[in-house]
Image 1 (cartoon, rainbow, N blue to C red):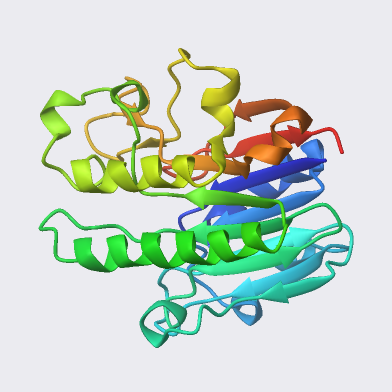
Image 2: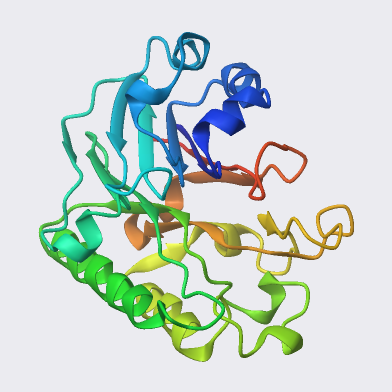
Length: 255
């Protein structure tokens, strides 16, 4: 099983930059995209062709050109859900839950707390909501995979300049503590499970030539139920793949 997560920062712009060729070449079983900034019907014929033959699940934001997630699977899912039951979260199109025979996959675009911290409470409340839902699924006996843009670097190893960013949303103590809470609730950071000391990033600012200088952050994760850790074959950060300010990340499972 090969799952790809990617914050595409606009699916139409991303496809126009040739990402569909890369996706077709690696041919994963499941593709999870975040920050799509579009509805399915807004894609032109050529862009739509990129996902020909896939089962498509879309959850765009109510606000045009903002947020949104989409999941594409080769096999038809058993069940798909897009609502958390709270309007403040559901209107922003941040979640798709896909039930397969082996696990429940959450494709999630976690909120950004913003530089002025104006959305920090919203972000932390969203973390709490998703963890509560995950706890319920674990209690039911489900195995869960959460993938997507967490908008938080967990440890100092996960960003280039931790000291300079200690008071910046994305590396605040209260944000990082939520990643700790997930790990304390039967989740494992798949990348750190395999590569505890490796330094790689998944996001780079468009400013200051940051990507070429590799001044980045690891914001994109696969958190998986502890019961799936023995199924992990590899996890790959494709930091050479362009098309967004984020790069795609692949999880390989032996199911």
